[in-house]
Image (cartoon, rainbow, N blue to C red; front, side):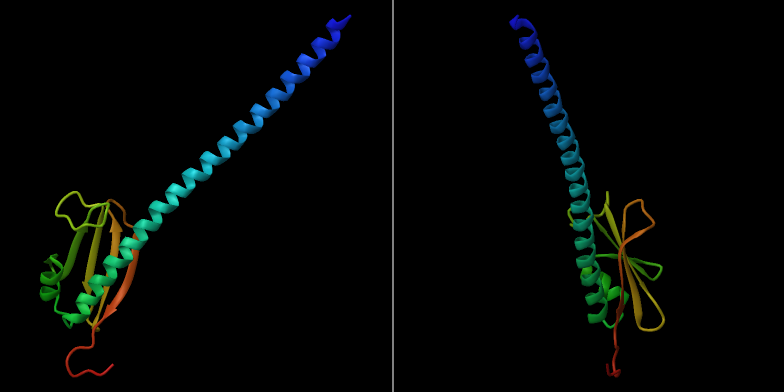
Length: 141
């Protein structure tokens, strides 16, 4: 007569075990999604931080040289072609000549301003952009 009681206990234990495994599997799936999102946000944040530092550096150089693109290119170690300054960076934000992960473009305008934009390689959407200005000789801020 003990057989039916043993069977109901075993069945109840198996149901509890299946529920516990289901809860752990669900929690693991949620954690993997959260970790994946955190990794993506970290990469985006690192790209934005590196782009802002590179753009600010180029803007300060442009301001320090009073808008002289050739002098700015010489200070930054960039190439200047067709009135546009270009700098290439690898994925760790070190300057590189080839295999660029990010490209900084400084484009002067006629009104003592320049647009500094950083793009990810192969993308048309800017990672970061700012406007640089210089005062020039004889101009008071």
